[in-house]
Image (cartoon, rainbow, N blue to C red; front, side, top):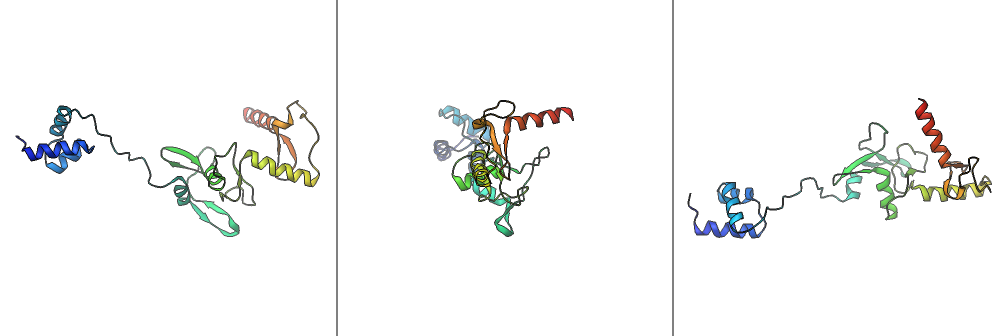
Length: 193
């Protein structure tokens, strides 16, 4: 089929605008192979394909889709959980995010360091930005609690020789423990099971 000068001009115009062969074919009623031949003849490379995996929502907006505010200032996660660990997660722009790490980012404006947990009475399910803390923040809060309660330890090493400045953590009641010893014990229990 012979193309008119008007059709050829429109093909060149659409190629310059970045149109795909399929879009050119659909608008002008020609075959995609004809559009491809003109693309090659005019020296245009392949058109960039629109990404269908990109959500128009921001990370925070996507997170909000899976949350529900409940009594007491808590925020309940309504999205999916990992089958193996039960961790509250969602996918945004082909990347998996944990609900609590995004909640932390929303409140603090920086990515979390270490594990993010809820420090409230609904710790199992709450993802409220006001209730989550990352490891350094949580350690500081619990260390202050230990000092107030008088449970802070003056030791510089745990019983196995780990430096407390690096490895000390505090439980919810402000009692100190060695994070490395705790992790090693958990691995030993898992291996024994």
